[in-house]
Length: 265
Image (cartoon, rainbow, N blue to C red; front, side, top):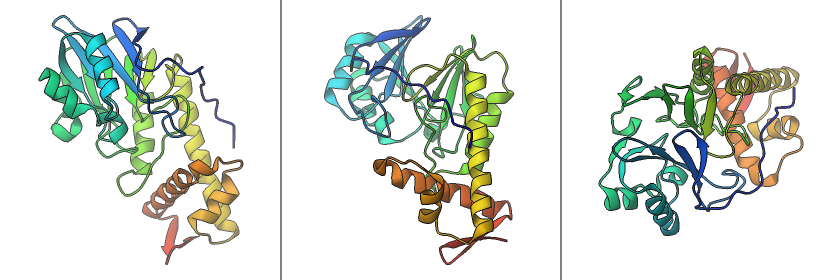
């Protein structure tokens, strides 16, 4: 497989707001891990009547206090998806601000306009995932497109076919100039980066087909064959993503699950 050029950065200070785009500041939560990198990115978006908070982050009192101190008047909250590292702080933040919440799980429609922002449903990593696109080409991509790693797709909530379709949807857009991901630094060449992510997923799928052509296998065996090297802490995530690929291949009529052992049709 062609190596995927992911982005890195020095550990940013936690709970300190700093500018990443006109009218947008980034606040990194103190929940660093192999799956969250330096922590979840909470974005503070300036508006005429107050601040929109995108992804409040984990349930951490210090992080909520930092949001409130940096944001001033919070009038809206955008949620990219409902995973705890993105919405754990939501109850405390809504209790403190009374802000209106916009999320797919709360009825936000695909294509809905909220001021100068448009909601783009991008399920795959999570069934309720939404990207938020600003008129000037800035897109908050949550965990659909991260900069430090590929997104984990864990069935049954996660769906690889949906995830790949979501990447293609972003590539079909024109004029996007900056992606602000849920974890990691900003992506300043979003088209090239997204093209590389899509190519990586398709190459992974092809590698799985080639491995099954050689011999039927269980997902754990495919992980051992295809993910070299692999941080042991990420083995579960890798096996989940392989399973998501296998389910897509089954839906495409290419592979079948024979009592946990996968084989080509």
